[in-house]
Image (cartoon, rainbow, N blue to C red; front, top):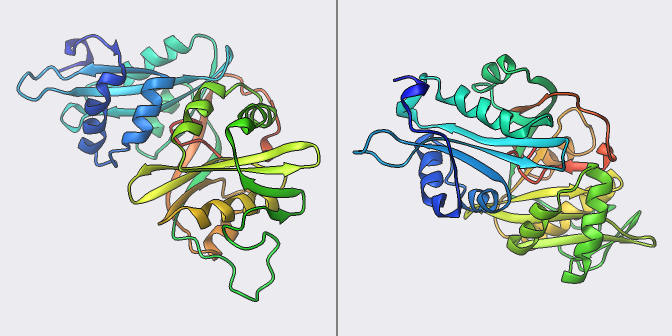
Length: 301
């Protein structure tokens, strides 16, 4: 069976949530129900229905998220195991790139997916490592520059960390746009509603950074996005959220930036998977990338 023998690629909607989850499980991924729900609501998801009526569901899917007219990200590119090697993955990628128009497109690539992306014109930009585990705070009596875990109003060099309120959302979006260099407002507004905890860094000039902890899986929470003016503020935000979030946490970090990977490992988080951030098109410098410490998700480069 070739890609021409599959049903046409169609736009997915929130009603396809169960089929998307089943596709993830089929590929040996975690169900990631919360992530799929977020993407189906805020992004453009495309899929192909399985041609075998005896085994209904999705044969494949891919998601496009736009960050304004000239930048977008691709994620959740999956083909059901039984339909692998038949050109469907390439067909989905070509479809989503056509949908992106002339925008620069970024993605997180696994080693398995990278050869296809290279054939489609993507080039490596940086590396990413996922650190996961139960966060261990600094031992009592040991000097710490980020205060005690979970302490409301924890002071760091550039301000104080506290739980966010609904009134903080406009300032959070402003700080995020200044750092990211494009508007992530629709996704972040929805994420703020499902996040287990949201913390902000309040400075004399206003909200200078923030971080969210949201539970994509019942067993662990993602800390992302994380925007901060400096590494100590980033550590403080992580420490605060970890102290208020039961169970393991996950951080997706650039291993070539020295500030957080070693610190995360020293606090109990282990590197568990590696991906490569890739881009297709001109990746113009924008925002303040040194303030971006973790992404929303590796489905949203």
